[in-house]
View 1 (cartoon, rainbow, N blue to C red):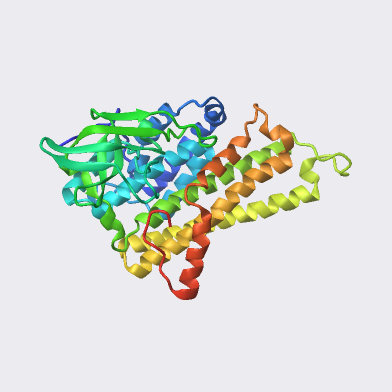
View 2: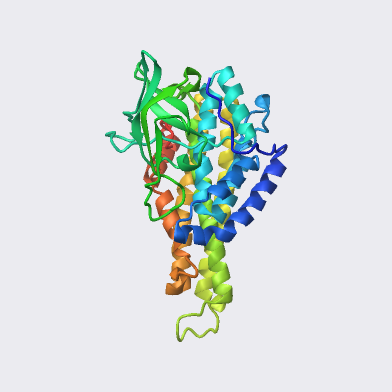
Length: 400
């Protein structure tokens, strides 16, 4: 059995209210250095250690295993807070909670007891899911195979958000029977090589680089079935997507708040506009009010989607899971568009000064543009329409 210990034991969070308060306090702390970290690509090792030592990493652990089992709407609210403070830090825990949802659905009781206990102590899970070499996003070449000396993992992964900071790296791999497994690989296991080669122009400090596995010894108890979570109705997909929707909402909030501050304090209108301040310009007032309404709608859609995910987690029928997927798709499509709109409007109303080094407001557009490519919004609307018009249930996968 491979046990992983955190760098420092985490605080235990007792209630959802406490979790929201802790998230708010951390967000205020992270916001202060967010621009500089993006500008200089200063990796947030300290900040992420603070996040997981705070106990936030354990808030979805079921009550039966010592957690508080926070609601999906409250989890989304926390992601909005963190992402509004720093769009990169906000994305890193997404894969951590995704892996815990797979564990909840497909893990054995012994696996849940052991791995949840680690998380309660502060263990951080990264990810190694995507690959460059596979012909399609849902196909994998990384393999976990039985050899004479035991299970061994071999393969190459990319876009491994959070792996650089993690204690375990849940990794998608094909087993000898051809089915996908999620292997909870200890970060410091011999043969694991995490490479900081992420060069995205947005979300620059997520650590979303490469991971190489070379004949890595794997304990059988660290292997959790993955593929079977999509062979029956489960919330793995909508649960993953509601966090992505909340990340986009947080990035939109950050752009909107910076725009308000900029316009109130420093901006000036176009020459000959007839007003002294941009904040008095009727066109600026109109655009600001419209975006404020759209942001509030995003909050409401996340709350509705969160309730639907909770229902589907309690009773994972085909209809409940489909409704959760559709409600989450609505939220994700909406917040995708709003994050791009908010970051674009910051440029439009702030002018060229909004991208000056001293402001670095362009990071919001770069973060939004990068993250919204994660699962293209063009997949969402047809799935919603097909469900509403034709009663066709959305496909069971992590991207819808």
